[in-house]
Length: 139
Length: 114
Image (tube, rainbow over all chains, first blue to last red; front, side, top):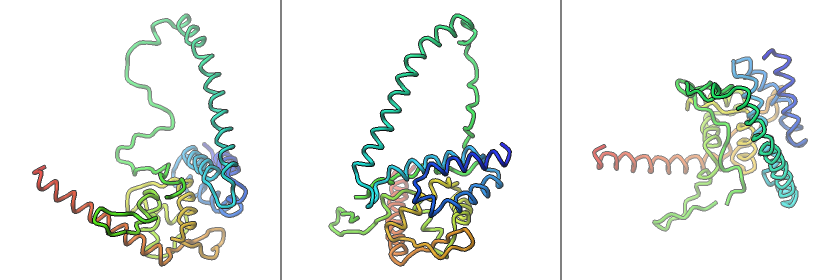
């Protein structure tokens, strides 16, 4: 991905954070992303990490944020996921039928697994922490 | 967070449930203040762990809320962080706890002849 596109992608993801977070870390986070991309880390991986961080930033209860707001956000997210899953479930059998008619058994031949885009084999590379446990309220 | 132990003593291992990234950040800050990029580089070197930037900021916010680190005045656009006295104490308690568990594990491996 070229630099302007990578920058736009990261900037778009950073806009997903709460305003309070953006005021505090926004500029630094954009600079950090540029440095990491310059070091060879894929822009998609940086953007994904920020996206997960934005979700956590919204869902982590804060003293100033009422629990009901967080519960509403969770409900809306769950509802959106449910609707998406429902739509997918209703279209998959139709697509499968079409695929079966057009391509026939050639699609079902056994073979080596296809590489999954965006997934890098862990062997010989540093371990990546993309999600930190314990972000909920501590006991 | 107070952790009750079976021997009746109460430890104050506040880092037990904060996650590995937070512990690694505290270890990295133990020898002096650092900003985000320096933290990521240092943690990669010391633990062979690549922290995602989103994870980094989440952990920094959490550690700051717990009073274990504090931000220093911004240097250009970067905010360096430093470990606080309670942060250093919590890290010491946590590392002691890990050492005890590690020693027990090694002893059991020896006893088991594995």
